[in-house]
Image (cartoon, rainbow, N blue to C red; front, top):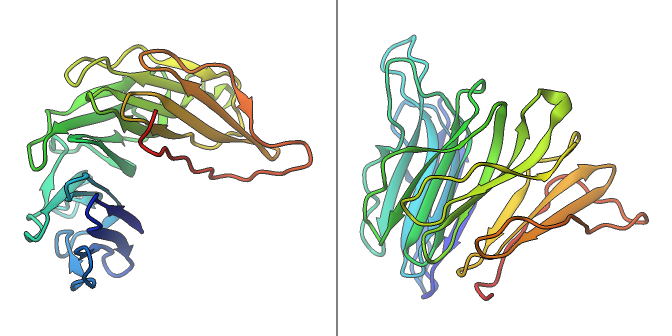
Length: 272
């Protein structure tokens, strides 16, 4: 499940319900009140997976997920869908964030959505053989998202990027990269300098990261960032990034007497 809470204590939770087909469901609890009825937000009869949500400080909820389009039996398109809720208002009807064509996109992996103040970013990867992360951002509760842009482009596979955005609308991403195949895994990062700027050329956070898990990322309102990942052999690595800069030297968080495991999580307290 994925959960969000706003400054007033309003609370939303979403999850994937297994069935034939699987669905994306959500429930909402106003501050001081109980949870309302569970609602199916994915399209009836369509396979829906990988829900994720973000909630703004003022209570706007954006829920994203993957959904098979299936206009016909041979339709391969897997789209990124979104439904939105504003306080006591009902959830909107689901809409597509992807630019859909006859045989593409085939989105995969959990769509990433993050919010800082009024800025939001949604990012996802398409086609397992494709070396791109697609991103869209928004400013203001309920406002539309920008047109899809190629957020990250690599010579090899971009795997499961994690994204963040600061209170000025500058975006950051980290991911596991396969620029030369499975033997050349690296942890990489990129960022934007403004809400409308292009993503910068990817930079390497760690070379020779074979055995690593996908990195996780946290970004503060001012734009400081930290990332962490499991490196194999029980080691958890981390690196930090100043505002507008690059990730610095690696820090090993575990000791030889400890044995970390895959799946670190990371967060910030909203301060810098």
